[in-house]
Length: 94
Figure 1 (cartoon, rainbow, N blue to C red):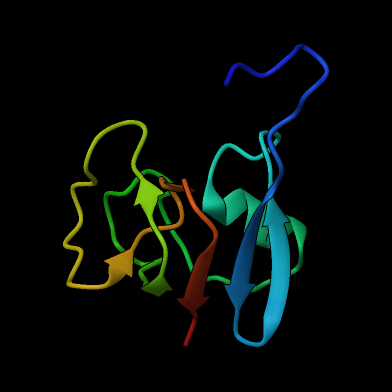
Figure 2 (figure 1 turned 180 degrees about the vertical axis):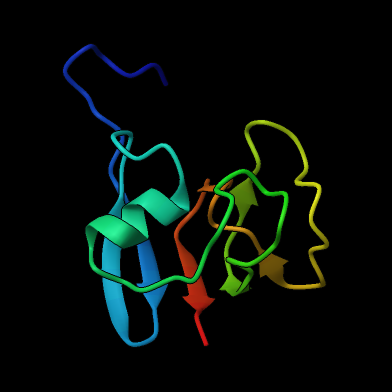
């Protein structure tokens, strides 16, 4: 079913440490979204090189629009500095 010009995709829900925030097309990365909502995430490079922003993806799916990051990413970990959610997600920031 095609969307009409007046239909907008609904924002995605990000559940993080007992808080919910919305990710929409105005955000370039998950990190930008979290920062806008005053969710503290440690980071350095913002490009997926250092891995300092590594957090746990508990549920849902993300995408790295610029390709896989260079920093090591373990099982169930993501780098919010260079990813976007493609479904509603649940994350843990320690």
